[in-house]
Length: 117
Image (cartoon, rainbow, N blue to C red):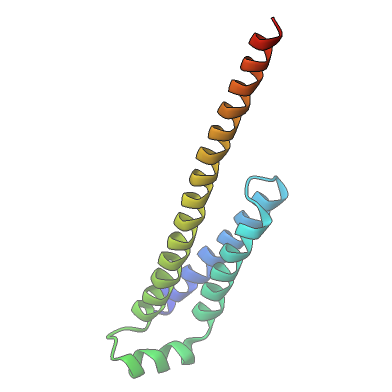
């Protein structure tokens, strides 16, 4: 069980490093990286906070401490994925509206050119 918490610690640290590298090389925007950094930092802290995990395990009747950690992590990442799905939906809607505006402007430009000739 302790080995699994060590693996989780290592994976959390690797995720934090990957996020920071992605921000530095501009592969991810800073406002999105904050959520990922908080989630990875939370995983790192929880994987090192064995007494707190044991308390949550007893409190909620979960059979194993690492399972508690992965349930918390899964819930956090599920919420993050939902948040990013909402953001992507808004971006898609904005892209459609922008494409429509461009089409209207192109129509007006074409009609002005036709009117001048």
